[in-house]
Length: 474
Image 1: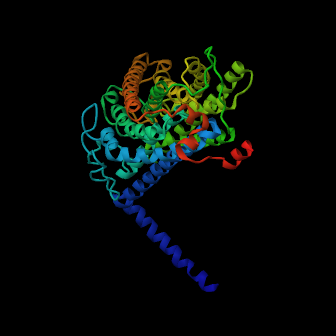
Image 2: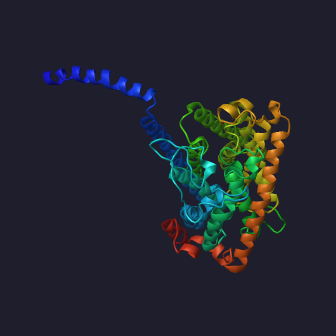
Image 3: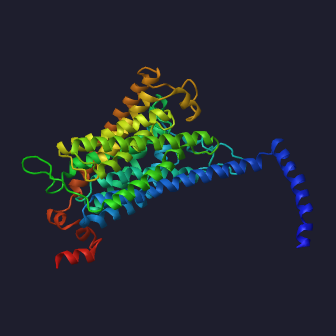
């Protein structure tokens, strides 16, 4: 024990001499260690945020499976499991280059057919100089950028899965998903995040209310129209015959997972830990929007249906999260709560609206992602704060336009509305054509017999609850 104590003076001497010397060297301009540490921390942050977004696949799977009938559970889970695989292939081969490659204002022309180009130097933190200059502002390695953006691309395809549930052919969905992520999603994404023409016009979407959510929503709307409603969803007189999900516990689990994942989805788009206050601000705006939407969705569903509908409460939370995704770095905390309150009411009203129009969406994806993706994008033009945009989003003063309620007039709102219209027109039009081609070639809808029996048996030859089903048939 005595020998151990005798070593303390030597250890203290080392600390007193070595640590100040290291700090002095760092202050004198030793960029190597500092650059490595900063790039390392930023990379870990971006990857962890990407992991959280990837984890949202579980949330989508649970929400969709729970809101579907038991006989279609395997099919829902299979779609949500395979969609990230096909998205990864499509985004790696062509989508990434189209979205972020150097090119025109419409699409990327460099770095196609596989991710390529020199990487950021982890030793010095040098700015990226390769084929993807649209992401040169982020100092993390190229592959970290790629994985984070891949997680977003996969989310757009997953949104479609729930809206077309319980009647789509499994192969048709796979083909649609890979084309969506390889071509449609990256083309519209290039306009906004890839240095394209919408970004140049001043359009703002920090984390993807339009780029991810309304793109997925428009594609889902086209699919719902081409597929038609599930058998028995609407009576002959046009009234709605409710088809209830089989497991609200799964839906609740999925909702919490998605809420948790959004804390990577939104603040991860900073792609740096350099400004902790910006990350903290985005985390809180994200959370407050979810909270506000839960409260308003509960109240509105209670008033409309005389009971607080759990599915509406959960979809309310998701609606608030979608709505604040575009503006999480542009609005104040207070206005994020207001955005959530509006989104929660909108999602309940939208579910009723789509049902009346006989647009059968088993999980409410159109109401959550399309309607509130559009609203959230417009909300930037209404609620954006110039000071927040500069300090949190890092915009230059000349680019940090204020929203309507903060004295900015209609300029930013007009830009946002224009972006919503052109993106919607492009995505809905191209995906409607894609669904039509698939319908005329391989077919997109299962037979009536298979739909009645369940897609689990017809498409996959298995059941999610075989013992339970056997018990019911005895």
